[in-house]
Structure formats: C-alpha cells, structure tokens
Length: 477
Image (cartoon, rainbow, N blue to C red; front, side, top):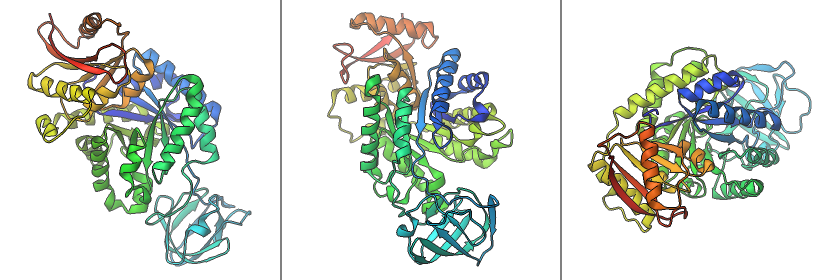
C-alpha cells in the first residue's frame, strides 16, 4: 500500500487507452480516472469506463471514475484555412449570423449569445488568453473588435470575457444526455463545467439522481471553479457540491494569472472548512506532454498544491494525449510523497475553539486526536457512507486512515479523499466480530503487527448510516 496521502486524477485519452498501460498507471498511483466528455461519443465513454474497471480489477486497486461534462461551448467557429494569423491593430468581426467559414476579417460563433453579453470597451480573451480583442461596437449579431494581442487563431478556440459575465448556462442539452451516459456505468463523480452559482449545482444533482435512480446509485458532484462570477459565491457553490475543482486554465483567463495562486489557497482552505473535497487542476505537469521529466517550476507547483492541502492533483493532456503518461504519474507520485514529508502537523490547534454538534463528527475528531497522541500505526473507520473518513481526512495527520466498508460504491467514492485508504470488507452485523475481522484484515495486509496501537471507530447498531458512535483504542495481540 502506498504511503502517499495526496490522490492523483488522470485523464483517459488516446495515449492511455491501452489496457496494460492503464493497469500500470493505476499501479503507479492513479486513484481517479477522468473521462473528458468534451471528446468522443457516448459509446466511447461506456467502453472506456469498462476498460477502467477491468484494469483496476487486474491491478487489485479500486479507482473512482469522474465524468467531466463539457459545459457550454463558448467558442469561435471554423476557418476556411483552419486558422488565421491576427496582427495587432487589425479589425476582426465575431459574427453570430455568419454561416460561411472564417477568414482574416472575421469568423462565425458557436456561442450565439456573445453579441448580447458584450459591449464596447470589453476585453475578449481567445485561446486561453493568448489572443486579446477589444470590443469596439456591437451591431446586431456582429461584435466588431480590434486585435490588441495578436497570434494564430484556429478552429473552435474558446472565448472568455475579462472579469467574467458570459451568460451561457452551465448545463447544455448535450450535458444532460452525457449525465445519462455517465450514470449508465455509475460514474462515481460528475464534474460540472462553468457553474455560476448553487442553483447550477442543484440542477446537476437533480439530473444525476434521476438518471442514476434505476441503478440505485448516487454520484458525488464536483463544481469546476472556472468563472469569475463563481468566486464571490464560492461558499454557496461548495455547500451545494461534494467538492470543487480549482480549474486554473479558464479561471486564470477571466481573473488574470496573478490572482490564481492566492485563490487556489483560499479555495482549498474553504473546502476543508466545509468538509468537501478539492482537486487542483490544469497544466500541473504540462511539459511532460512532450518531455520525459518535469520542469522545476512544475515540481514546485505540484508540491505547493500538496502543502496547501489539496485532496488530489490532476493530469489532463499529460496522460490523455502525452508521450509519457506512465512516467508522468510516477513523477507526480514522487513529488507528492516528498512534499508530504515536509508537512507541518498541528492537530491540536485544529480543534481549538471547534464545536461538534454531531456525535459521529465528535467521534471522528476524537479518533484523530487520540491516534496522534498515542503515535498509533493506523486509524480505522468502519463506515457505510464514507462520512466519518471524510471528516477525518480534512485534518493533516501523518497516520494513515483505513476506511473499511461493505459497499463498493462507497469504497470507490473514498478513493479521492486525502490520506484515506478505502478497503472493501464485509463488516458483520455483530460489533465484536466486526472489530476482530477488521484487525485480521489489517494484519493480513501488513498494516499493523503485534504490539502496534491503532484507533478504530464504528457505529452501534452496525450498518446504520450516520451512526458512528464508538471509538476504541486497541493494541494488536
């Protein structure tokens, strides 16, 4: 069992769809596999999900599957030559009514609402901010602009507005169909692109729950924070979600690169306060798309996200389309482990001034406190829903948390929790039998040995969700 606490999310794509390679990536440390619904058809995702489940079975490690919805296509249309070179000072028209392919004078829009969302003086950032256009005037369906920062603009590149303010809904008709597809293979998490507020997340949850009902499944929901408008509403979005993704690409374009590091820290902290999970994403190991080793700056970036307390770090094109998918995962795992070794643990300070109104939450905190002071080898949580291990994982502690659950869906869901190692165990209805079963399970896996101390939490009666009400400290006989 790896001692790494930070989890790794890897995106599946053409570069990583070989079954043997995917199995090797899971063995090397992938905990969550992301399926990007911006590419491919429904059947492709169904096939890939099966590929993931089979590879994880061969590797002997359960991983979570995250379905990442495309969200609104806020993009330019296509060009006759595939691309144009825009020179600074040139005039360029974004035309929602244009049907023919684009040229040096202008281009059509996939996003037809743009003329209603902008006014003279607005700044439009294309292709992740590499091209900047200033809006001169809006005439009917046409947005007349002057090129401020030029460069190559190719087919279907994204459009952002500086400071945010594009009205596109977070969930499109395509997303609604994709949710049905994702639920057909019981994706463990659904990531929602461009949510603006809690209502967007509530709608996504409703759609997911309806689509998943026939399978008796309930996915976790991740809000991707990539719009300027989402920042002031971060807390309400967090409360309506199971976690957030710090989507640094689009977010940086809307709020400016310089604002992102501080926002990342704030989001991670806030997620912890609200007992939610957090994924840090975008360009973490970007240079490894073409190089076998990361840059020093990338190593620092990943390490800093770990030191900020992120649950997971994410790889996108690095594993989906890069030359070195396996090596990227191996490097990332090494960086996470090294950074965790330098972490400062202050468990006592975490509880100062804290109040717990729920018994199960108080038990979870008691287990952390006790295990820390007794230098226990492990913390064990017998859990049905995964709530107790989630609460425990919001605090930094060097002692691994083993979450034993009889439910496969819960085991997979917990794969993303920081410092939690989910194991499947058929916990008996009798408490004493379950506790001795748990110890045998840990001994068999070499997690504890004779003389070791560990803390264990469970609920009586056994198997009642939200019923954790017991903490026991044991010495292995």
